[in-house]
Amino acid sequence: MKIEIYTTPTCPFCHAAKELLRAKSVTFEEIIVVDPDKRGTMSARVDGSTSVPQIFINGTHIGGCDDLYMLEENGKLNALL
Image (tube, rainbow, N blue to C red; front, side, top):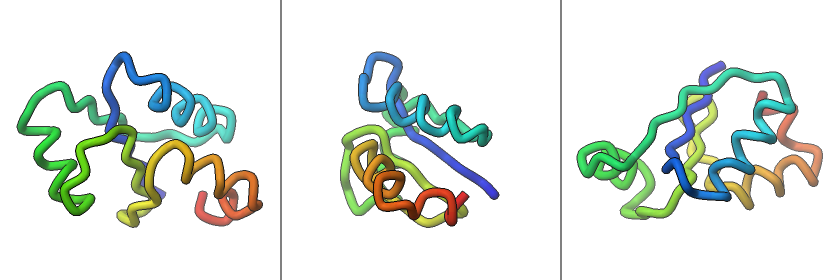
C-alpha cells in the first residue's frame, strides 16, 4: 500500500489528515508543496486544484481532508488501507 499526501507546513487540514492516518498506524509519504514545481506536479495530478492536502491511496486520488474523514465516518477508509 502506498499513501501520498501533498501538504504545506502551516495547513491545519493537512495536520488533521496526517493525524488520522497516524491514528490508523499507516505510513505515508508526505510531499511538501511550498516549492512551485512540487505544487505544479500535485496540481497536474488533481485536475488543476492547488488546495492542500491532496491525498492518494495506491495511486487513486481520494481528495482532501474532508474526504478522508468522510471515508472514515462511512466505514470505508479501513478497506482502502
